[in-house]
Amino acid sequence: MTYYILIGAIALISWAVSAKLKSKFRHYSKVQLRNGMSGAEIAQKMLEDHGIYDVKVISTPGMLTDHYNPKNKTVNLSEGVYSQRNAAAAAVAAHECGHAVQHAQAYEWLTMRSKLVPVVSVTSNMSTWVVFGGIALMAATGATGGIGFYIAVAGLIMMGLATLFSFITLPVEYDASNRALAWLKQKNMVSQQEYKGAEDALKWAARTYLVAALGALASLIYWAVQVLGARD
Image 1 (cartoon, rainbow, N blue to C red):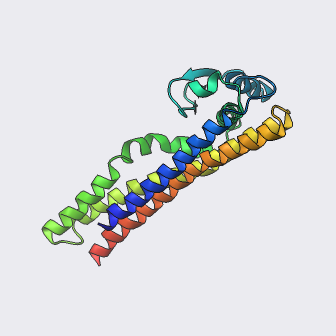
Image 2 (cartoon, helix red, strand yellow):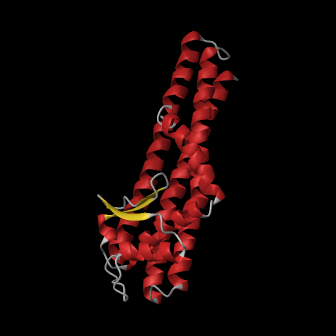
Image 3 (spheres, one colour):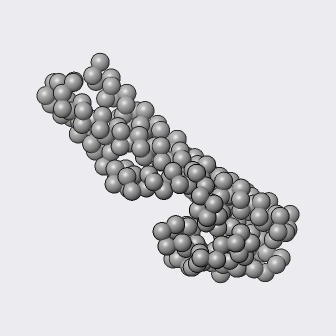
C-alpha cells in the first residue's frame, strides 16, 4: 500500500507539472516574435552562429515532442514549434539547439548521459519487476540471503542506473536552457517581454525532469528499504 501511495503521489506531482508546462506553452505561444522568425529559422540561425553546419532541423509530429538526436544529428521540432513564430517556439527551438552545441563541444554531462542510454533503455523497464520477483522469492523460500536476495539486489542496481541517468539528465537540460537563453539575449533575437516568456517556459520544462529524477530516487529508496529490511 505504501508503494502505491508513493507512486500515486509522484504521478500526481508529475501530472501537475506537465499540465503547468503545457499551460505555459499555450500562453507564450500567443506572444508573437517581433522578428517574425519561425522556430525552424531560430534553430538554423543558432546552429550557424555556433559554427554547426552538419545538423539538420526537421519537423516531427506531436506536441512537445521536440528533441535532439545525436545519432543522426537532427534537431527535431514538433509541429507547434517548427513553423510557429512566437516566444514558446523560440525557446524550445533554441533549447534543442543547445543540445546540438553540447554535442559539438563534447559537453561532459551529455557524453556521460549518452553512454548510459543503451544500458538504461534495456534495464529501466524491467528493474521493478526484478526487485519484486526477488522479494517474492525470498518470501516464498523463507531465505533472506539466498538467490532471491541477489535477484532483488540486481534489480536495485538496474534501478540505481536509471536513477543515476535521471540525475545526469538534469545538468544536461539546465545547461541547454542556459545556452539557449544566453544566445537569444546576446543576439538580440527576442524583446524583453519575449525573453521573459522564453525563460519561464524553459524553467517549467526543466521542472519536469527534476520531478522525474526525484521520483526515481524515491522509488529506489523505497525498494532498497524493502530488500535490505527483509534481510535484516
